[in-house]
Length: 211
Image (cartoon, rainbow, N blue to C red; front, side):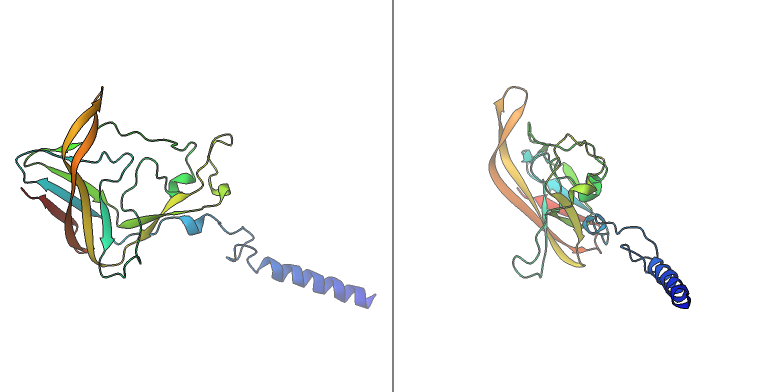
């Protein structure tokens, strides 16, 4: 009888200790760990405005930004291939953060026209201070998605850029021609303009399209 009482007390003590261990979450509760948290974007050191100014006497043309990014960024001083990622997202790029609440996801993209920068005009691109990479987030994280719909196999996760010099590249076209009714355009004579800035000290970088 005495042995049975001691076993009962020991069993109750073990259960109490187990309840204080934090369970799967490890935070003092029995809540499960958030398997989606490791796929959320990091906080950046600051945002930057990239300004392109057309100093030519004729218009130049940008990518539309819907299917192809209008600019790219590369931290300088890194070994070749050490830093990769996309600075700007298109309509096809769903962030992992947004993927948790979206009900439907884009499946296709169509560029219809190329925005122009007229002589003397400027266009500004906001950059959030992140470079995005595609990662495979667990399907359970797309909790709001239509169960019958198609979920992406990957989503875009933003990684913070370390302080230092960064090079911005903007692809442009010197000319454009219409290729269908309704204003569809094809870019001709492609070229690039570049500019460097100190991140996050400089919040604006202006890149000139020279004559």
